[in-house]
Image 1 (cartoon, helix red, strand yellow):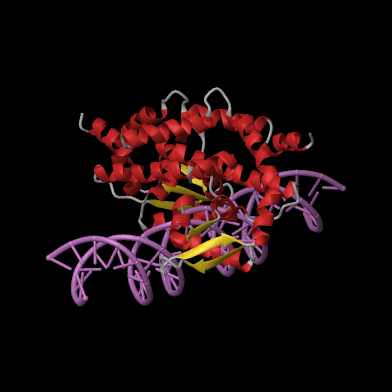
Image 2 (image 1 turned 60 degrees about the vertical axis):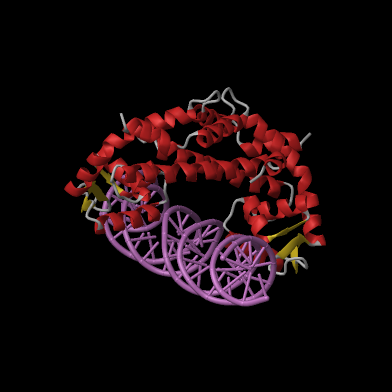
Length: 160
Length: 160
DNA sequence: CAAATATATGTAGTTAACTACATATATTGC
DNA sequence: GCAATATATGTAGTTAACTACATATATTTG
């Protein structure tokens, strides 16, 4: 979206540009893994990474952790199970729960990915450590939204 | 996504948080229009706003302007045509082109929306003018990506 | 000036998220 | 301790973007 749109409709414009930036970064991430000869689907990453760190989780906790609705997680888990990267078992203490974990194949994949993360972190830092640091800016905006929502702020202007 | 995920996988984490922030902002935008008694679908905004500013455009230029693939634009245009908010005619100079414009109803809708933009801009400024200004950060990151891509930067670390 | 290429629009099918609903098990509180 | 409520998982269907392909018209080039 071009400059004049941004000016007059800041809200949507920010949203659109954030989205685009996010897409760009995601695509580049995939390319980096490819450059290392690691072929995997980026959409798997949040689940795999979380299981790598936490060993075992049930579906809802995993969904909360990665920030997806649980049906999305379930469908990712189905794929990952087909790929034999994860497996699941019943929680004996609470039989409603399905505990998910990486298989040996899954752990092995994540081990080959681990060295790439350092490169990614460095390149990310390089790009985002500009005068107005993007990560900090996001943190600050999230904090200011938590303090007082967009709608509340807008309403303050309306009632004037 | 939580802190430990962010630390180790900065790239995806930023992407996810940008996406979430973007969603949040979009949803709030809808609520503000609702507070003004204007009922419309936010996904229509980019097309309507662009046509409001530029009067008449063909499908591909419009798509480029709003940053969507053209089939997405076409499907939005279909909806908007059904709502009688836009109409289209053939370009006489180049009959391949379909020129799209707002109807009177469309122009009227955008006129009622215009006063809201000011409120949105002010509230957006309030939220994003923190120590690390989000808009400026986005601009800077976009500029630094343009100068040297993520992949190139990452490759510099790989070849060491 | 006709053949090859490029551009504009449109259709079909895919994808990856979502919400709403259904069911099973656990927990809470009268 | 059982009825009501809450939680965990799963399924079905929707949505809004996408890519790949098809066709029509314009433009370029040998």
